Amino acid sequence: MDSTLVPDEQAKLPGRGAWVHETIECMDAAIRRRAFVRALRVSGPLDTQTIEKRLNGYGHKVNGSK
Image (cartoon, rainbow, N blue to C red):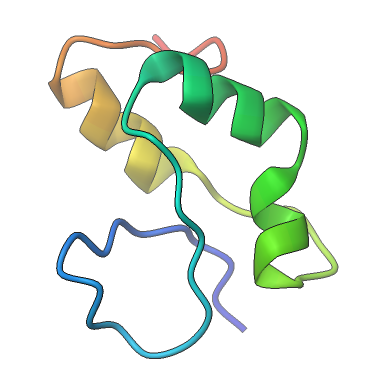
């Protein structure tokens, strides 16, 4: 099972999804509170690197990212 979060801006990918504001505060809170794990109903940790890199591309830092 792939445990990587990927942005689906077109809302066209199959499977469960989770909505979150595209702000550093919301992303950090969602990661810290394990909101994605609950919303997506997965048992283990999720790789948030793809989403963090995307926000970093906008000049933001998420959850201690460099």
